[in-house]
Length: 328
Image (cartoon, rainbow, N blue to C red; front, side, top):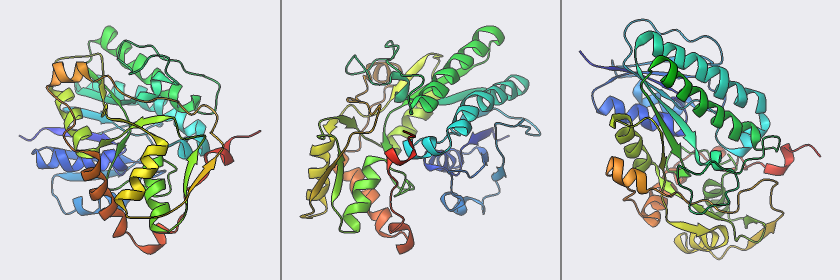
């Protein structure tokens, strides 16, 4: 008998890649997504599989799955600042009500559940790099608080279900991930730079560009998630790439990779934008025998190839401004 896995956020970036992976590994996959930020085109190729079924459903409402269920992967949530600033209440609800519903389902089905947490639980960190033992520096009422606090609550209620009900849980703290199926216009720096370069526009850098990020290619992130699911560990584990780079240096790198002479335009730094982002992955290295293997140039080449083959109307859907959704 094949094991059955429910993947929420299945039509999103990471969710769709997880569907691919678990089908390839011989699971029956049930995908669920309300399509508020997901796109059915990400999973269109899966509908021909007899082992894949899909439900369009908002997990903030009661979730029912008939039959046996072995694993739940909870990846439903807006994840780019543009998305969760446009729909802040839905972001809070999917992290709270949605997580509550899935934990109840896991309890009822005696299923293992892995939740997708985020590096944003660390806020604007005062410790660098960020280990799992760091409790974070989060502004709960700032514009990004709707996402940060939703994920922090998600971790808290997950551990409560583990302690009270003995639920088998896993918590993946995922750092910046990139690759095919990202949206060009979701406002995040890597697709924004690539979209601007493909449109022959200036690359927009917020602040002076000294803020840092680290980028993990999607296949590495998926492998880390699978290894964490199969590990005997209930606490949070960082999944990300510690290869840190400043945004300004990254803009220059994109120009070089694309053989472009584009200008760099400096814009005001958005409120609450973290100054540093770099995971301490020593726990994942020890516990999961995992670390990223795809170098940034190789990963960007794959991602660029994907974006180049998108329909032209996708290319000209401009990324939104982070600041336009913050009320003065």
